[in-house]
Length: 354
Image (cartoon, rainbow, N blue to C red; front, side):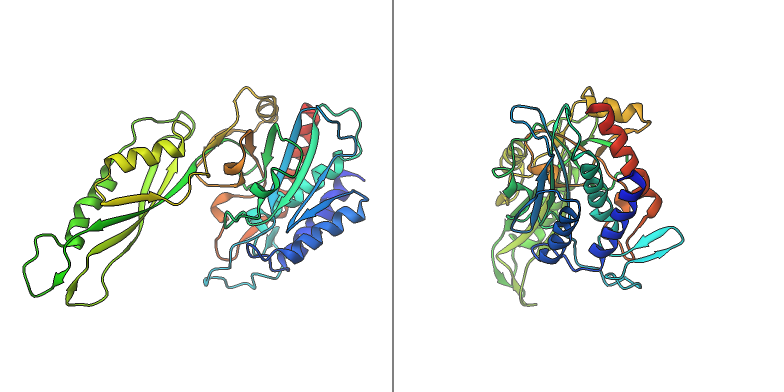
């Protein structure tokens, strides 16, 4: 099948995916659509929960293995939509619909690319394609659950919207729950240990604190207080204030190091990380995948947004059609030309490397 025919088929698949609800942990029907693609092309596949995966025809044990991965779950549509989020609308070169940009365009482009290379012999790398679930929720049954099941991976291309530029590093994420305590009391009486007033200095500390180590690719660690909750009655000073802190971690720190720094230095009564597993990720700028991308005119950068790269222990490159700024937006869309370009660049890139 020609690249043009594969591209047209991929766009049709994306339209079907858009029109099929696939919220995180509810991806049964979109997994079935992806299975139908593999059946149409006579490609053997396996399904584990709502993850669908396959290997190239001439997969050979002991050969370096490249993972091609993107996800088919979506967030829920926000209230600002004016289009039907579950209607694939093609207009003025744009394809509208929930999940079109994040990450349906990437997914169908990688599936088409995998299909293009599936029957080729004597490839330098083995190929493994995983259309994964539960990426948006970092769920237990997503890509992380597949790593013990699929063949061992040496390097990965993770499909997320990057305008087909090369995200050679990605920030990790640690979410902290923190408590600021005080003395509970009646609001009518003096109280020099008001937990809410105590929080003012704590918030100022989080606003001003700087992690020492920066990254050439990812810049500084970014720490943001995103939630605050306290009190139940107007006349009662609460015993504590609950805070949530979002920390985007560069590749100069492990998540464990970030937790140790905050546990030792923050002025909170208690601060606890929810999880340390979503680490920063990167690929060497000298890796042949990166060099191949640069030779095709693609730029390199560091990504501030989280993806399934965070669960991989191998080197990984984030690369895909679409624009990250459109993700999770109302009336989400991807340009049809971006999918056409994405498939071409994926294939050109792998032709250089494979």
